[in-house]
Image (cartoon, rainbow, N blue to C red):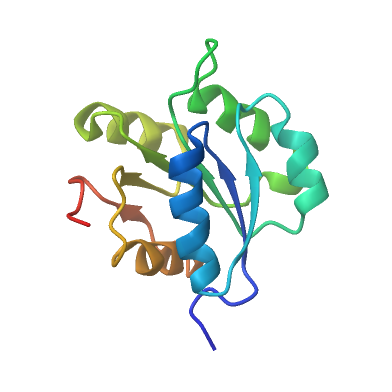
Length: 139
């Protein structure tokens, strides 16, 4: 059985190329993926995709939307209040990590993601381990 078999991972990412890479890696290891691009219809899409095991959330979106705002919106819904949320972002880790830790995220994975490490990082979070990746990994 693959390490992510039957896990439901919802990705909130505005860049289609980044989403394609993330979704492909997750699906290669057995996960089912859901997707929302702009963070404006997140709750409705999460409800349609449920049950959700993990949410991967970019931090920087266009049109004045931030991943921190989307995080608050998700946490305000009782059915998603305990779902782990991991920031996957190109934001400077030295700035982002203290903020995401304080906010209550379950981890931070720097972009560009590592093709080899990413599935293990996701597996760790699904096993209730925090992942705080400070340096972008080589692909």
